[in-house]
Length: 129
Image (tube, rainbow, N blue to C red; front, side):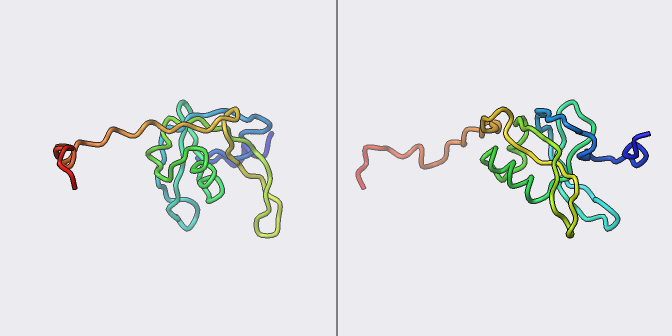
């Protein structure tokens, strides 16, 4: 038996990915109570997948860089690649999930809606000032 199967998680773990580096599409980001302390953290979920990734600063900042937006609502529909690797944490080497561009291109957030016309749009442009 694979020991990772003995300790199932509600969230995606590095061991779930193995050597795979799938391209996924962001479906939503939710704030959830995580761990024993029930600390509120963002979790990014993907289209067609049950488990999401609990976001840390590293992955959050990478998604911001890839999408060009700090607003998680604008991440929806963006393609990213996720992969397992290792990092140092608390003086130990641990497995982790990281994020990178899907195929080298910048992730593309959904376009922002057109702004509503406002009062300034109706001012006569021929009036000099």
